[in-house]
Length: 86
Image (cartoon, rainbow, N blue to C red; front, side):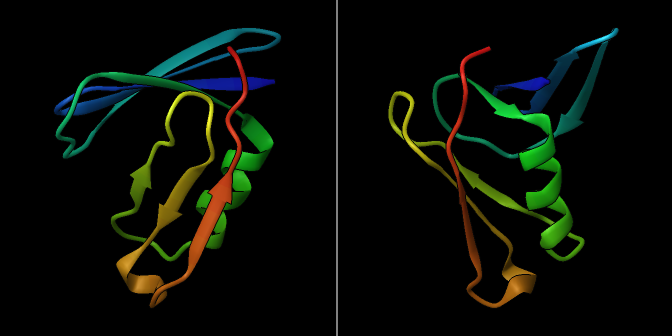
């Protein structure tokens, strides 16, 4: 299953489809044009679980390039994930 993130200036809209559908919005601080990116839901969950609680920095790659996840609380730890089409 996949999860789609639609990132805009003040929120990330998450959408998932599988045996059912779900959507949720979370606040964010983002400067730039709106971006839509998809991930394997299991991979995204493992990445988020591996980083300490708190703010996470998400840097989308160009086109379908890798996405970088970091956390200030993780003292320089970086996690990279390839997006998927959704």
